[in-house]
Structure formats: C-alpha cells, structure tokens
Length: 147
Image (cartoon, rainbow, N blue to C red; front, top):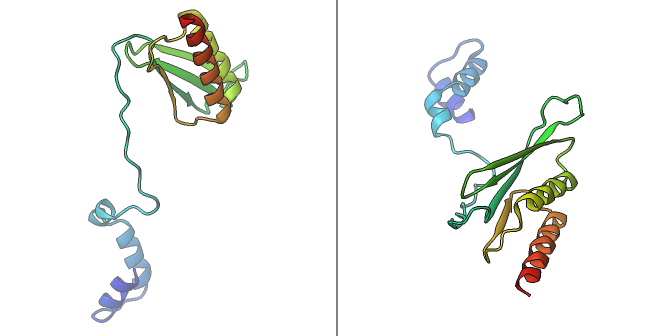
C-alpha cells in the first residue's frame, strides 16, 4: 500500500486518495489471485496404502457443531471403511474422545477387529487416549486370535 501510494502521489493527488487506493488494492482480482498466502506452508500429504480387504482401514472424523438436537447432540462421528466406502455415523453431544471410543467399540463389536497385519484407524486429531485405546484393542485381540 505504501509503495503504491508513494508512486502515485508523485504524479497525482486528489482528496481521499489514500482511502480510494486502499479500497482499490483490496478489490484487485489479479492481486488477490496471485498474492502469496501468509503463515505456515501446508505440509506434504502422505498417501495411505490401499489394501484389498474390507474393514482393514477405517477413517474417523467429527463433523459439527450443528444445531442442538432434542437429545442434545451437536456433533456427528463418521467412520468410513476405506475399501468398501461403507459409512457408520452417530450423533454425539461433544467432539471429545470418550463418545468416539464408545462408537468405535460398537462398530468393532458388530463387524469384528481387522485381522490384517497392516490394519489402521486413521484420525486427524489423535489424542494419547485414542491412540492407547486403539493399540490395546487391536493388539490384544490380534494376539489372542493368533495365540
């Protein structure tokens, strides 16, 4: 803004020029399109290996907050099987780890624990409680099944 103001004020002047230039620059489409975004640069994505076995990799996420329901639920937990794209959803009152672990346990009780050696639960906000629960659940069941 200051460089543009200095360059133009050497040639022209009119009342309210600074305000006009500020508004003009903030609406300049080529400037907005080509402007380098500030802040930390996004990292590289790490692709998740695809295994041709149903219920091997589960993707877990929270959606919300939404308008509070009659049962006081404001979030949705979504679990998607990476191979079949089968979706499990449950409305919950908060995005804390507890309701997520209960729902994950329910899904595993109904469909069984993935027995493939590379089974994974993918969650972007992994807490130590969530990580420990998944390790205990999968490791104990897997070792029990294989002796």
